[in-house]
Length: 208
Image (cartoon, rainbow, N blue to C red; front, side, top):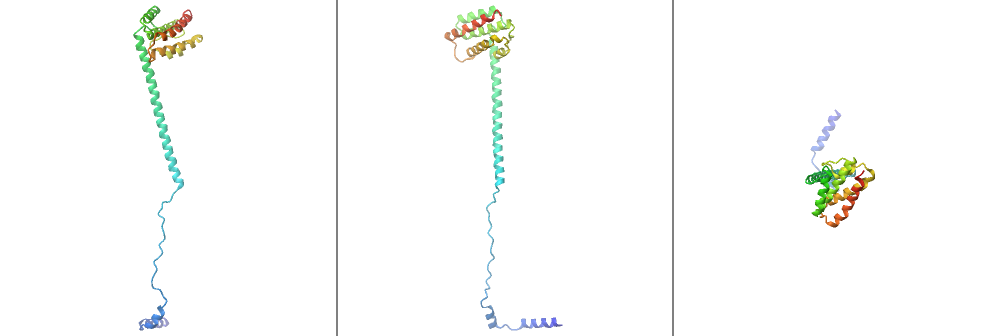
């Protein structure tokens, strides 16, 4: 019952006429302008994760290193294949050139006859080639190596089993290759320097 009486009293106060003077006195000093709420500042700059950046940098460095290694391997393989091809072509060219004239498989008399003919015709490059074939012929006869049309000069030097003559034979092989495969024409001066070395070596091995 008391609560009902209290509510009726409150209702009567609300319905009572507004005292304007009292209302003006009450609102004096009061600020009804509502301030705008403070907006927090946002930092839109991306957060830099130094650890993640280093991982990305190291990954790119690894990719570059792998790419360089791959290029190096490809170039190395290509260069090696080219060298093999050039050696094979050189061996074929030598075999073809030898087929045009006497070889270490020809009779010794035929070799000496061809040598004299080349020398008289001033074909010094051919004369040196035949001298080398005479050397191979004698070594084959002595059983120090086995003559074959398809063998290269380097194979002969590796097969040579006469230790006392191996060094001189190797030097004659280099001299023959320089003379036969060299781009310069072999003149009489060059031949006069090469011929005695071949003849001396042949003389030293022909009797074993």
